[in-house]
Length: 368
Image (tube, rainbow, N blue to C red; front, side):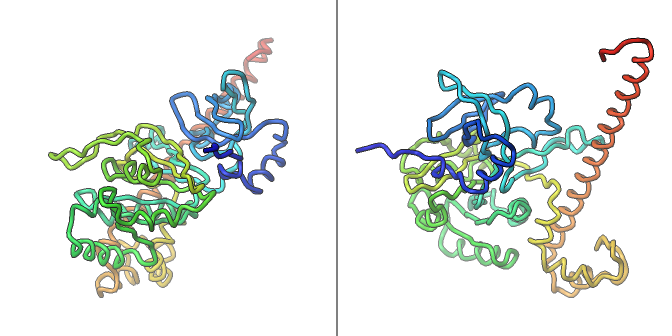
């Protein structure tokens, strides 16, 4: 049997990236897609094969945040070296970025950073298991992240072999009551339930990302889609019902059908970054009430003539949904405040360096 020849188009390359490559004047470099991320290095793939790549020192110096570094899903321009090595010269603009806030909530903003989960993704499979992990509030958080990145979310409730059909029906009704117009699939890697529905989303050239906590079965589902056990999986603790952290790196896999999937380490805390657009989209019915509030800057917590509070008291608004909305709004505002403070500190430090350089030059020292 002949081996299928991989072209860049099979990896997701299209006219969008070609035009950005031309705009950036990178035509002399080859391009590749980042398919795995390690500490200080990246595995990249193009029609010539796979390479272990590193970024230049200049890129490190010019990077203002973690968002400026390559991430799984990125297309990069690079110089190919011998022994399957490469040097990344630039990261091409992204079509979409899935990101979350992580780190301690620090007023200085120093640890309140952004983590890039995956880029250039079209569909996000948000996976929860039927056990203790199942939580509609957490689903809403993931939906906010996906919607903010303009990525189609699909909810996957996994491990249905552990419950009765009646319980599945109950969970579906609960999800649909809170989250309208969102696709929901019930799956099991044990009895193959829902796998055909899952495969139907992963079209040739489509990049899909699996998100969820440890132990929900993301890797097991991907192994089923691949038709082989490429990803190591582990048992869930019978004591805590939590999964072990088997997947430690983000990595991209390629289906025989031509679809592309990204596996991710389990995410325990779904921190929201600057995702106002995503919140407004997922909680659109609350936003409709909010537009009728007496005050433009209404917080919907204690103000008089607040239409959101009226809807809550009148039963037109779900109490759990309202509570989650308020919490997510607070997180977003806090994150943006922290980032603003951090930017101000960087600007002040830049001004300090300019003054110091100017004062230093008065004494005849030119090199600073």
